[in-house]
Amino acid sequence: MSAVQTDIPAEAALLKRHGFDTVDGAFAFAGGEALTKPRLGSRERIRLSLAGDDGRPIVWYLKRYGADSWATRLCRRIFGGAGAARREFESICRLHAAGVPTMRAVAMGEAPGAFGPGRGYLVVTSVPGEALERCGEDFLARHAGDAQALDAFNDALADLASGLHAAGFTHRDFYASHIFLDPTPEGPRR
Picture 1: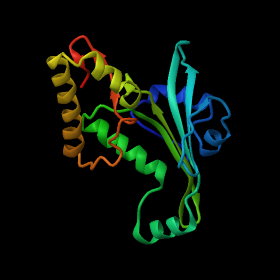
Picture 2 (picture 1 turned 120 degrees about the vertical axis):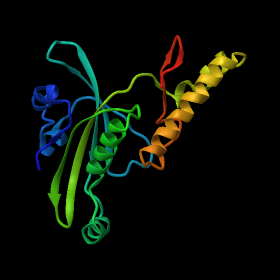
Picture 3 (picture 1 turned 180 degrees about the vertical axis):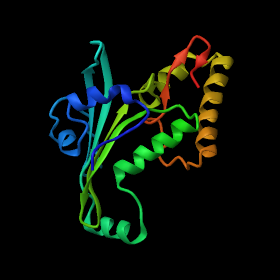
Picture 4 (picture 1 turned 60 degrees about the horizontal axis):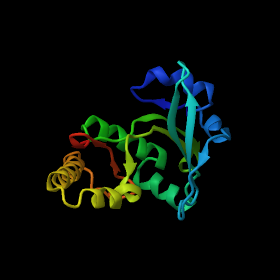
């Protein structure tokens, strides 16, 4: 299956230039910075810094998903369901459509396999700010005596949770490494 594009068609030439317009091309790509962590299994995450058509750097993330186990693919074939790349792609698009601040899904593709999709990939944009896991303690320490800043932080976090629920998500991945803090002079960006 060829790559599925989102509403970012202006990036089609950049995707094609780096091979992200096909599953084989996405898996052949050898550049970028590998982002490893325990328990990724057959998944890979790679930070990309690419030159856009205007020469400015564009930061994207490439996620490559190895083929699921035979048992998982068989269950998906019997009970229905998409592969990991398509599920994440569709979730990101739903979140974006619901107005929940998140990355944008740039491209996705899955190779056919026995009993459903085989390996797949997803390219997403970066998001502004820094993960709470890395900056949360410092932010809270800097604003310990500033009730207004802490209230703005709590309100932004509550708005995020509310937006996820309103969009029909039960935020399984709602933890500090997936929530980004992007402070502005008016407080955390919502």
